[in-house]
Image (cartoon, rainbow, N blue to C red):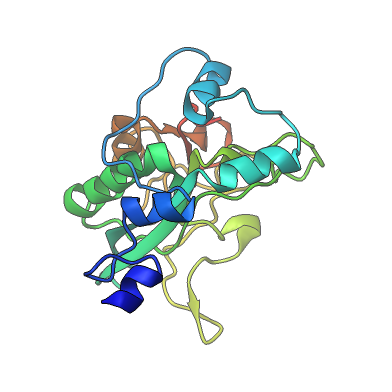
Length: 220
């Protein structure tokens, strides 16, 4: 008991708010309430971050945002149709939104296969143009669903063999290689995954060919 107290733990072994205050640190909490914002994209960024971010790389801003993100876990149906769990890192304020998105996909779109997901990553837009503009992943405000099938490669492989031939590339110079939605890929606004994301404030990047991408800033 004395060891726990001496090392900043409560009697049950937890590092709680009182311990954090004593240690001079702030606990990074995941929001349980869905975040909403209105207005322009710039206004939404300001509302989310508490400041207007630079459009290009800023180490000081990166350090700030690093302290605003959290990991979120959720149930999925994986590439084999089995129950599984995935996780990604997102802005604290959007944690409940993301959890709700994937819960809806899991319960309402059981045929959809979630192979991999991506979230927070402070980086420039990766569109092959060499732009210095930051991606919205940099603000913890964007997610990718089933990334990695770009440039014509199959997404899921096992021991160098394609597991499922239904998989299609998600990116091809901003133009779809086919027009049909699948249980892995979003091709149209009618896809139920696109709707699930929209229901919780995330717009679809399919409007400019980035079919795997969803952003709290209307898909941009």
